[in-house]
Length: 489
RNA sequence: CGGGGCGUAGCGUAGCCUGGUAUCGCGCCUGCUUUGGGAGCAGGAGGCCGUCGGUUCAAAUCCGGCCGCCCCGACCA
Image (cartoon, rainbow, N blue to C red):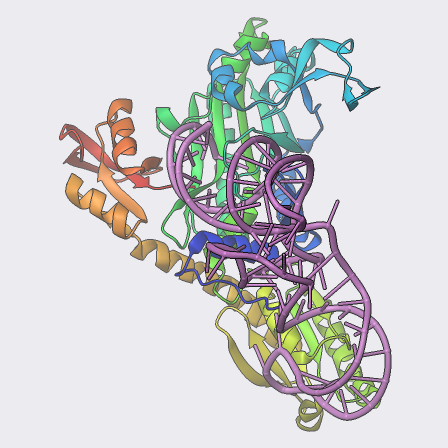
């Protein structure tokens, strides 16, 4: 089977789909809109989970687990929240099947008294629970995260980027004061930023969503926005300051130090398996996946090259030695001494899978005491002495991690333009895409109009945005700052 | 839900217009030779041509219904 994939230039979305399938990250499933995450794809997600989980734990959060099902009545308690999610909820109405002449059918006598919603997010069930957990200021802050699956019945799906069921983490915290809750919201936004930039080598813009793009039920939604290689923006994570909206809806109060009863302040925040899609679209090329070492299931693949068993044995002595040196440095190594494929096949395969560094060791290396070192991102080969290989590779991996970030950042910078008139605005979005920095009058009406006419939305108002007098690109009304417009995933 | 495309071996496909024994490549099995960029040769296995119905002596091919998937758009992380 030829595993060559279509080029990005030819058809970007086909490139993406083929890459996901051929690199063995995921498969389509028997259920429309749902995917099977295959071991290699899941391994990447597991590395993401571990890194994020450590960061959450280091900032005082604990994991817990809440039910998949949410009573329908819970959902209707927060008005904006229901409205935001009502259109995409899967609903469980019955709890039994039975045999019939037509085969297995739903047993109509087994109807649930109250329908259960399959969680699209867990605010409601969690806040209903928190009511029982919080009585006094001593119970606060309550800092909880859960790793879970959620279901949102989307009209159109795309592997990792938008599937009907997806995996994520959702943090839900309760605080005594508004200020504390806002601080938490921003602390998490910083964690997401650090994760995206350090681990994924993916530069992001931190910002605030406009009213239009805000989470249903939030007072403020903060986000990190990344730019993909095709010039489209991707929201990589969100952190919400929920104010007292859910506390009001679920009557969650605490007694403060003065013995007075107050509503608690809340946050919620999440990132999902969508990040795997973001990772793919940020770094990969026409030969396949390119993974940043810190998230790659294997940082190094070692391919021995040999003619016969005897030679393999000799080469494997060197391979084992190198493997143990690398492993001692904490590097994740895979050795592929399999006889079923030729070295050439393996080279292509591990390039497709994005393994950052490949070491090839053959008879010539035995003679010369060298190793062929190949780096996936730049497709460069060099011969390096076996002596001192571990520090060399260690250094190379961190160079790759940094270089991927630099490259992605350079791309984003060159794809970010300031625009001051609507004609140019449309032209840029049409031809080039990318982030367009433009003045906006702050109204939802203008935002909607622009969206209708150009398909571009306001991705965010960047944090610490430079204040600058100007006129709205659409209405001409005065504006104090530029916001980021882009077409988005 | 609208528009487009597709359904033939595990995967990718030809054949369909103009009906008559189902094509090719990859993969798989056996053997030998190979192995530093997706190895070569020889032999072999594998098909209710998505599904239901119609037309016909005869249907992968023509006609109709249904089902499924992918892509583009509206909705959204």
